Image (cartoon, rainbow, N blue to C red; front, side, top):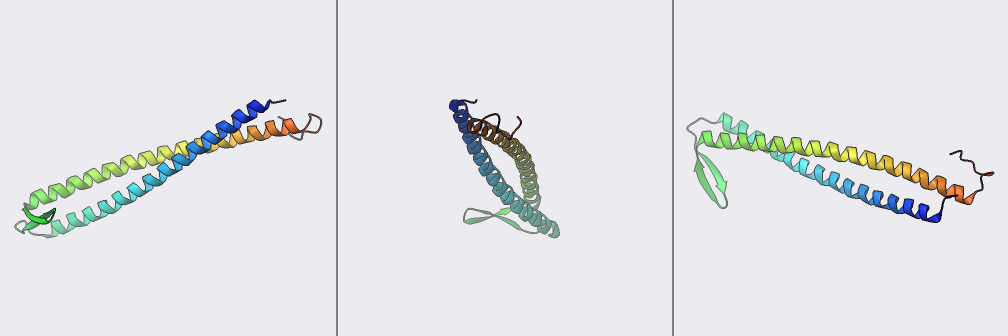
Length: 138
């Protein structure tokens, strides 16, 4: 016969894991939002690079810095956009890696919760029924 303290300990452990899972799901949601923002920025930067490629080398290019437009060299503008694309692509890769890691932790937490929940159920049933009437064979 399992003691009530063991059941309480299992329930407390179950609640802690459920809270951890909830935090993990919030992290996954934040990750999706950040990746979405970076994906949009990557698309916009790609369009800017295509537009710059369509221009002649002697075309005036201006960069918006605060409220001012500042003249910029075409080669420098292209280099800046390529660097931005490289940075965003790297960040997307990192956040994709974190997403997979979060999903792995989420899966293991869910598995743990299912196993713990089954243990709590078995102990609870064993407490309420005698060995003669218990249906579970564990």
